[in-house]
Image (cartoon, rainbow, N blue to C red; front, top):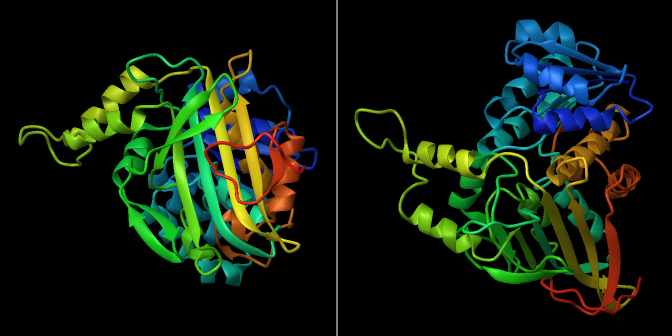
Length: 395
C-alpha cells in the first residue's frame, strides 16, 4: 500500500513513523512546506519506505500528482486547511483521514458524505485521540452490553513533573486549548443532549501512583458527533479533560479577564486578546517535556442479566529517549485507523463519517495493542464511580 502524510510536524512525523511499522505499507510519502521538518523526519525515521516532498499541500496543482495512487491520505495540518485537503482527495478519488479540528471544519467534511459515497471514497475526520480513539473505545465498550445506562470519558495529558505555578504544559496547540476552554461542551443528561459551560463540573479523579489526585472538568471538542450517535441509547454521557488540580480555576481567571476574546486590543493593531494569550502560552508553556497521557472510559450497563461496569484505561509516559506520550497516543490510533481504511477493512462502501462509524473497535484495539499501547480492559460488578477504581475486579 501507498500512504501520503500531509504535514511533518510533531504529530505528522509520529504518524509517518508508526505507519512505517506496518508490513503491508510499502511506501510512505510525507509532504511539508518546511525543509527542516522533513530533514528532522528522515533523521528520526531511517526507513527506505519513506519519501518526502517539500511543497505547500494546499496547492492542488502541486499535491495532486504526488498523492495520485495513494491508498489513503493522512492530513496532519491545522484544522483551517483540513477540509481543503479532504476536497482534493474527494475530487481525486482517494481515501482521507485527519486528526480532527474545530466543529465547523468537521461539518464541512461530513457534508461531503453523499459525494464520497458515490465515488466509493472514505473521508474520515477525527482520527486522533479525543475525539477519535476515545470515541472508538466508547462505542466498542457499549457494544459489549445488552443495554447501557451511562458512559464516561476522561482523558488528558499532564506533565510528569508539574512545576508551579501552572503545573501545566502545552501538549497540543495553544489555539486548540483555548478553543476547548471557551466553547460550550455537549453531553447527555437524563436521555437529552444538553450543553454546559467549559471549565465547570470540576471533580477529583484518582490514578495510581505517582499521580494520585488530579482533576477532571468539562471542555468542548472531545466528543464531536458522539452525543448525537448515542442519543436514545444511553441516559448519561459525558467527556471531561484531566489536568493537575487547580488548572480549571486558573484558566477561568485568565479567560474571565477577556484574554480569550477574539477582538482587537486597540484600533492601532490587528492583534486580539486571544493572539496575545496564545503567544504567551507558547512562550511559557510550550516545548518538549516529560508527559503522561491518561485515559479512562467507564461504561455502566447490563450484561447477561447483571449490572456491570466495563473500564478501559491507558497510562502512557514519555520514554527514556524523550519521545513524548502525546505523540504515541495520537499517532498509534491514527495509524491503525488509516491502515484499516486503506486496506479495505472499513465498513461499507464509502462516505464521510467519523472513525467510530467506519472501523470496528475490536480491530483498532488489536492494532494499538500490537503497536505498544498498554490498554487495559476490566469488568467490575455493579456501577462503579469513574473517579476512583475499586481494588476488586472480575477480569
